[in-house]
Amino acid sequence: MLPAKNRLKSINNREFGPLLKGRFLSIKRKQSDLKENRFAVLVSKKYSHKATERNKVKRDIFRFLERNKAYLTKKDKAYDFLIIVLTTGAIKSDNKDIFESDLNKILETINV
Image (cartoon, helix red, strand yellow):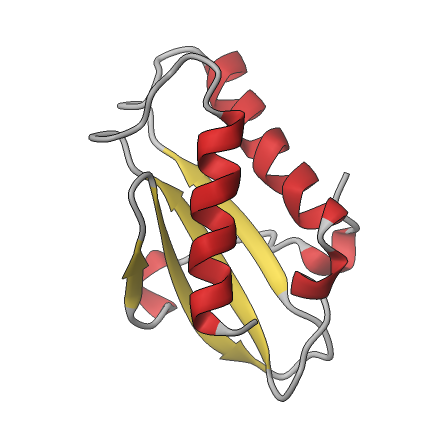
């Protein structure tokens, strides 16, 4: 699991800055005063009415971030990231690889 120092506890969607869209995920960010990047994942009930499926997607994304430790440390400035799972293009079966490739592409674009 992602360390607690890299997770956001409370989220106010309006505080976050511009939206960076991928095929299945969107990412918003805001600058932080802390030393490390923090992440939160938002999965709507429109994705699935079952909490177990929504939590599985969150766990998969957090595991990806934990495996790729380069995204957790800052280069110049630390940011808080809000990862939003889009329901329109998301495929509900075996989507782990799809989300990981999309997330990797977006985070490389931002140069985290």
